[in-house]
Image (cartoon, rainbow, N blue to C red):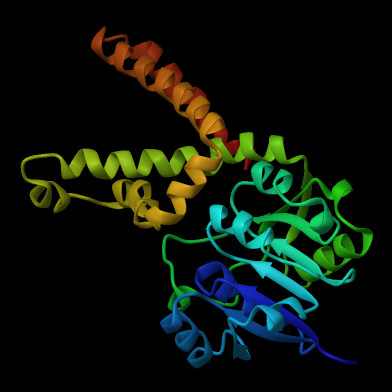
Length: 279
């Protein structure tokens, strides 16, 4: 059986881990890596994330499957730069927002495209952050599949199954609302908490007391600012709604403490405990 040529554009944590996962899952794939950062390409080859690297558009265009593991604004620009894509080619984006990407693709390319969001990641980035089990038993959301070609949907599902992901299908607008609450808003809060501490007169002294809770809540504040700026921009309205709802809860907590309503505060915290019984 001939190997399928898979292009991965973007060789950081997401793209690099995908390369490792595909190579681990099957010998059916030959991985072509692409990244505007030449050092990332060099590291990806040295770490065995890909089989070769190329920024040649013709080389990438001729691959059977093309993954876009780059910031969400760059995904739209890159997608609409593709020309003369073969009918069998499958293009899959891995962005954290979906509706604007799904609806921004030119009609001539839409059947080739599958909108996907693997719900996996860490606060680290770059090729050295990649590892082959990132996607194991994690959820991948596939959006607006009715707009994708039958062949492309089959290819996408097969490849995500092979790397051990659990597939959820969802409309892109619903995805972006949910993602705002469980991913985008928590990142905003983590950045805010980190900056609140850094604004104190002696943040280093405060941080000598930092333990598990603080470290857990601020871990994702280490994430790439450039990447998250794009995500916040694309999901602006949903993010603002989620922050407003959080703000109401935080002010309610503040009011209970101010008014020394300890019984009501206890009930409010017990209500929050229910969340983890759902998981």
